[in-house]
Length: 272
Image 1 (tube, helix red, strand yellow):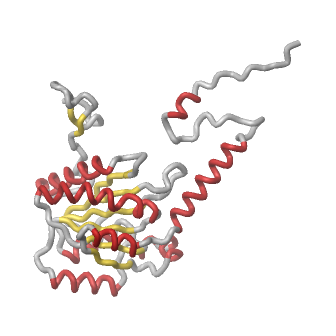
Image 2 (cartoon, one colour; image 1 turned 120 degrees about the vertical axis):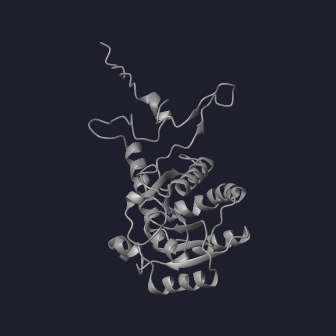
Image 3 (tube, rainbow, N blue to C red; image 1 turned 30 degrees about the horizontal axis):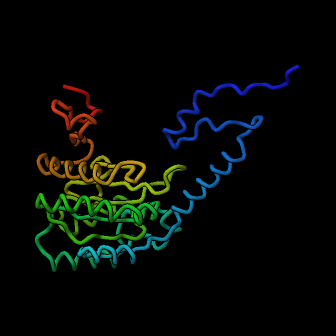
C-alpha cells in the first residue's frame, strides 16, 4: 500500500512573487510553519524599532547643507518620544521656543514664500532618513525650473502632520508640504508620506490636505511623488484650495504612451 500522500496544489503560491503580503504561507498541522512565524516576528520587530528610532536630524542637516540648502531645527510641544506617542495633540503644535525662533526668522526674511517644506520624524524616522534627500533632489530640481520659491527646510522633532500648518502660517507661506514617516506596516517599516496644504493655518482638519503616500523604493517612486506634488501645487494656486475638493488628476504615462497614439491620464478616473 502506497502511504505517500501527494501535496495538493496551492494556486496562491505563484502570487507570492508578486506581493509582499503574507499569502500561501503553508501550514504545519493547524499552525504556521516555523519559518513563516519567524518572518512575522522579525517584521513586527522592525515596525516597533521604526517607531522608536531616534530622529537623526544632525545628519540630515549636514546632508542638506552639502546640497546648499539651509534648514531650521524646531521641536513640537511633545517633550519626548513617550509623550509624543501618548499625546498626539502635542505633536501638532510647536513648543514656545520653536515658535519664537520661527517668528524671528519670518521677521528677518519678510515677504513670504510659495512653499514651506517641513520634515518630521512621525512614526518612522527610518523613512525620513532613507527617502527625504532623494525625494527633495527630484522635487526641488523641477520646482526650481518652474520658479517656485521655498523657505529653508524646517525639521521638526516629535512632529505630527498638523504642525506644518503652524509652520506655514508663521512663515507666511502660500503652501506647505509635510514629509513624515508613516505608521509602519509589517511589510513597510520605511514608508514616507507627503501631506500638502494650501493656505495653511492652525486649526485646519485633514479634509484640507492632500496625501501622497507610500513613497519608498518598493512603493511610489521619488519621481512620481514629485510629479504629483507639483501638479497639486499648480492646481491649488489656480483654484485656491486643497484637500477633498482637489483631486489628484495628474497625467501619467502608460506603458505605451511614448508611442504614437499612446494614452495618458489617471487610470482611476477612466476615460471621458
